[in-house]
Length: 346
Image (cartoon, rainbow, N blue to C red; front, side):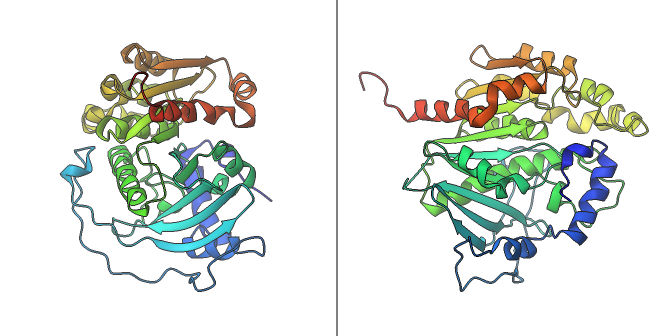
């Protein structure tokens, strides 16, 4: 039986489900590499299918700053899992790490026949897993027209939720979840730059829900991100905490308290979206989405610079009709292409 995160709207249930999947279906990097090493995959015969224990240097991380310039994060060498070759794309599974006890499964999907493609980072909302990055049809869509895709999950999400008390989850630890994930985006871009097989002048980020929040914040502190496409990003923390359907009612009082709001106020996209004046930015607003209340969507749109595009949809069906067949990814690809085109008269 195949399960999906869409069935688990309650955060507590999603956490329990995440733990069950860890035990039964294998969320670990080592098990994923073994499961995907089929006859169809062309893997390096000499690569180990289990993660070797690597020494990790002590890192210092400032959770009061979105920029990694204020932290001292040391990246271990990326650990190779496997590589699969297909007619129109290649897919690599790697593990990267710069934080103790927090290895990140990184899916690198490249179009065949393009030496240094533009690259888009894909980050979906809490709660999510990495299943879509193993989906061949998804990989064909994100690499269409010669673009690379890099997928991962945010902090305290999926395989990255471990060794934590059950009372702690993405929202209860929102400052940590958001800030460390913004740091992760910057560190991942650093890693991609070392590879030499991407056009690092054409870097974009697609984010959904909390992933859209993280994309906005990351672009505000990292000018290497030239385009952002955010689908129903979480924002306007006072109203979001008070009204989001994602919050269990028995926990909501904890998150509307002044002391909790004070910790997260500085990391509100409402403060940071106005700073995105040099990047191409689109906000996708699906009216029926209840994780991001309507008042939060309006607040974010009101502070958006004039250059930000806002695309509105009545419901998921309307969005699907407009974006089916990979069209949802076309906007950010087109914006990166525009970045690469020489200015007229240059």
